Image 1: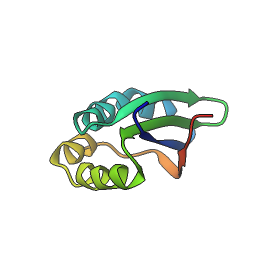
Image 2 (image 1 turned 30 degrees about the vertical axis):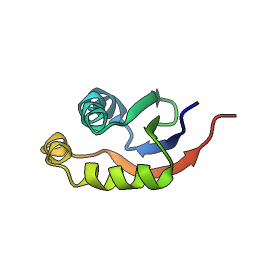
Image 3 (image 1 turned 120 degrees about the vertical axis):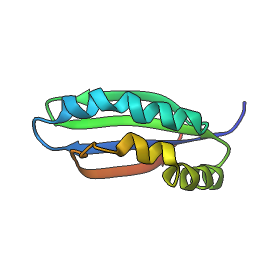
Length: 99
């Protein structure tokens, strides 16, 4: 089995803005996929106003971090965020393993 690194991302979202984030999410997901990331899943927890998703990349955490830096500085990512006021109050990020 090929090695991949998966990051779990849990966002605390401003009350009343979860749908806005969920509707915009495919825009940024498409950009991530252009850089070789795979969106493993995405869920909106309306009761807690949280958006939970996982993203993976082939290789180890160093590989993930290197491509993340390229992605973060990309013009495509900047364009995806242009005009979008993020409703995310807090982000909880961690690398996770399948058990």
